[in-house]
View 1 (tube, rainbow, N blue to C red):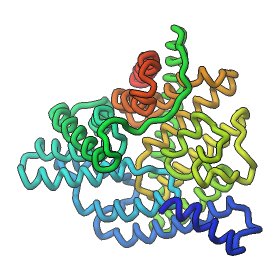
View 2 (spheres, rainbow, N blue to C red):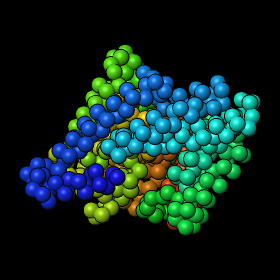
View 3 (cartoon, helix red, strand yellow):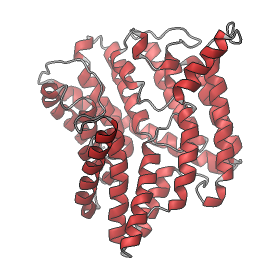
View 4 (cartoon, rainbow, N blue to C red):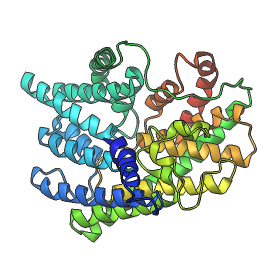
Length: 406
């Protein structure tokens, strides 16, 4: 669907002579604007389900109901699924992690409510469902389970009774997903990093990344809260908010096409900055209005970081449903690359900066230090980079400890 909308359709228009003399980056604005309109209409249609509430985010709803009743209302599943499909296909900057958690958590709530009337057991089923759904998405059951169980509280994991059921559900979920989709139970989502031999001074780098990501995380958290506050104070209808969001995302994508989407497929390009067009997302093959991306320019990295921040904040302002896991990984990796460019660090020595900033920024905003460590190590490649992971693991742990103390 995404490939058809972002590549096949404009290519067909160009072949028919309808798009030959118009810059390709204008397509980014058109699709983003239409996505905003469709999202606003969808939010209006589903207002009766109680899904859309000014100033309340997807995960806010989920964890509020988990704390109170131990369940997630199943009536949220249909609007979440429909609206998420629209925003994901249309290049929205919030990812599928949050919708996946909510929908599978709601499924767990249904099962738990059928089997028991005790809140503590219903909560276990809900968290196990959310963990299983997100584990199938990442392919990393242990890290994802810790991540999900850390999310409901600002001081890390507290629902310890849900840990074992959630881990079991996540493992089974990954085995089933891998067996049906890939034909094998091993492996998970991972990216290719440059191998490097780390020196003891790496802990100073990790501490610096922890302090910097903590400060950046505070700013991003305040920015997200400000977007929700503005949406409440303006009190416009959902169509206006979402259309405004689409305009902003589209305008930013005209300048920096890599700011589109939530960052999962874009992250590998950020890590390696490959010049091979096949390694780029389809819409990023065509440069924006400022020209091709120059990975040796601090200004280019600064523009990319600013563009991604604006697009993410605009998505929150417009009421787009979605998660911030991959957007934060994207931003952390980009900041890490910017540091490497400013300090003239060679490519073969950049991994520690990139993964430390990814872990630090994620842990700072979501307050999930331990789940984030395992997720980042998984994305770094458990099997592919086993030796390098053993070296980089203490650095990521140190970064997360610094962030957790912030």
